Amino acid sequence: MVADRQRGGGPPDPGEDRKPQSDEAHSAFTPPLGVPVPAPPEDEHPTSEFAVPDGVAEPEDRRPEGSAFSRPASLSYPEITPPLGTPLVSLTKDAPWQDRMRTMVRMPVGERPLPERAVKEEETGPAVPRVLDLTLRIGELLLAGGEGAEDVEAAMYGVAHAYGLHRCEPNVTFTLLSVSYQPSLVDDPVTASRTVRRRGTDYTRLSAVFRLVHDITSQGLTLEEAYRGLAEIRRNRHPYPGWGLTLSAGLLAGAASMLVGGGVVVFLAAAMGAMLGDRLAWLASGRGLPEFYQFVVAAMPPAAMGVALSTAQNHVHVQASAVITGGLFALIPGRALVAGVQDGLTGFYITASARLLEVGYLIVGIVCGVMMVLYGGVRIGGTTLDPEAALQRQERPVVQIVASMLLAFSFAVLLQQERHTVLYATLNGGVAWVVYGALADTGRLDPVPATAIAAGLVGLFGQLLARYQYTSALPYVTAAIGPLLPGSAVYFALLNFAKNELDTGMASLTKAAALALTIAIGVNLGSEVARMFLVVPGGAASRRAAKRTRGF
Image (cartoon, rainbow, N blue to C red; front, side, top):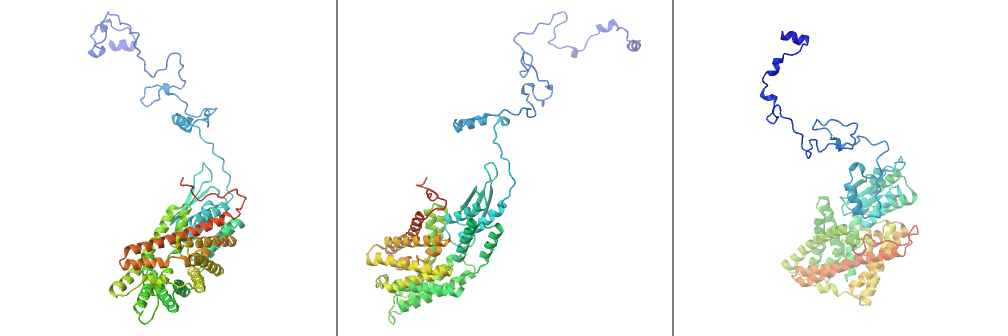
């Protein structure tokens, strides 16, 4: 019957309402039957705090908030850019940058103003990586040849600028070159670097690189032509053979010994000792020994020759100290010293520190080689070497001028200079000694200011000749300062150390260091004076100071 009522849809049985309900059908807080439900208090709001307030229309695309991952209606925002675009936010430049940046930070990311990107045009110039590679290769040859860091940077920037890379920034240190190019302020920079692992003294190659840079910047060589010229420079062999370099080393030592008062016997002894030391240094280099040990073995034969002649003074009266002094002239690293001081004066302090540290290591190698021989001769063999003997030199102007020019000539050959520059370097060295002799011997001026004036003239003439020839100033300067190098002061310091006279030795060593720094500063000052009177291309109003001004 019940089933029939369900199928027929008849009225329910009134007895079913009187059936007791289960405990789940009502709550303990439900009012009893017959008690009216009280109205809710006016201060209670059962709605969510995220509900839209009265008077505010709900968004049409509001989604139900049933899911925990659904976006609340109060945080509604369009998923795409509005048809009229995002409103432009303009920040005035008159406000301090702190306020402008703080306003930017507080803005939502989607509302921050962005710089307009420039439309890129098709690149018609040379490829940027190839230009940077050519720039680094040219800078590597210049730095390896001993050129100053400022001149290397100038050459690198000139090459990059010639090929259209105007936003280019070269950077030079002692062993690392880098160049960075940024097409515009909104483009990513392109950076390349190259490491200098080997150095050499080939001023012929250095002059060829300078001519290549001049052709690139003035005649507009293509990249292919520039690479072809660079390959020819690398393939060129040294202008002088090995035996010619050995003879030049002996000639330099002999001329230096005559410069400090030696005679024919001293000339021959100094030349033999220097040539033997040069051959031993070549042997050590072929065996892969570092340059420090090459200087140690190269300094020992001249010192041994001087000790031997001092032992034979009963039979042959010679100045043994002049023999050792002449050998030291051939070993003092004047090229690296001048380049190091020049880098420091122009603001490249890291490169200057590294080069001066290299000079210090090489001088320590010379000291070790000479000291071992002198200590063995003075302490073990009983040889007597008088430091004052070399100071009592006679004034022989003609002989000394010829010796100074001969010293500069042999120094130029050792530096592998071009043949047409050897004559200029020789004459410049003779002028340097004439000025020094006139001030120190005739005018009785202190050797330090006399050396500074003579080195300043060398730098002045060298810079003028270099600008006239469109090449580096090093071939005209480095060999010319050879007669001014403090070879005798270094020898006196070493001899006093060997005789355990430390105070006198330190005084001589300090004098040698002062003379070396004076030479370098004088050369740089002469170059700067020459640049002051040169006409700057392009009609520039003034020439900027090097790197930094007054430490700021």
